[in-house]
Length: 118
Image (cartoon, rainbow, N blue to C red; front, top):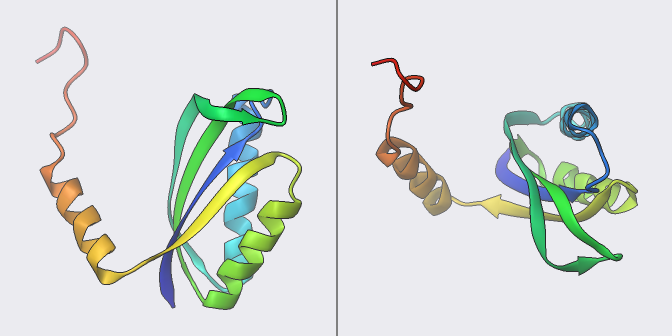
């Protein structure tokens, strides 16, 4: 099993609940192929660097997963067929990328208490 990360952009007209549903469904694709979803991070609605099909915004989602190479290729194929996915990029995470991500997680400041409470 290899480590991968996929970042994809969903259509901006989707509601937040729909984005959650699509993200869960895409995670299920990996699970059905015998893989494991490590993390799903919804990055929110952001402005695109350039227009895609006359759209200027999109919902960004990043997902880390472990699977075989065939399962990642199948995910990539299914994302291209999904009408709600405007763009997707699947990358293979090597040991250097994983080490850098672990180091960045350790260097991140701890979550702060709610405003007015300390």
